[in-house]
Length: 213
Image: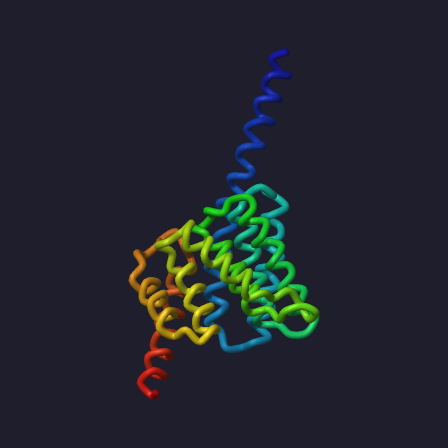
């Protein structure tokens, strides 16, 4: 009886520890993602992204209920779609859509709503039907949801700025970029510095164009 109880206890402990480890180990892949985006060799970047995507998929297999693991997979797959072309781009975009949708379904608050804002960018950047699944209206809805969940998130305001810039609303985009730049540093977000740099670059370009007008 004692052996049976001990075995049952160890089984329960293992079920609790393994998902926690999987959740903990997934986020460092985002640091590698940020590093890969600083490279200039397109083919090398794609190889790195494919490797990161495969690693992220393993983490989702280890813990299918960990929203952060699906967010990591979606973020990497989205960047792979940006770096690819043809059928490879479409496959990566669909993988990103499915992963980010799963992350948001499991926990809309994961990473302060970044699953929602990243999914919004995917719908914004992807061609519409029949070529793909792009939908600007859905992108706007997801951005609004992300800002409601994480009103102080640099990533969410950066996504909002990209949407409004795409719609030709430069002044509104500027407000979101300034909010993103002034956002408090999030030491738990490996992509914070990258988002901040992108926001600063976008704001500088907008200001330059406005001065030329």
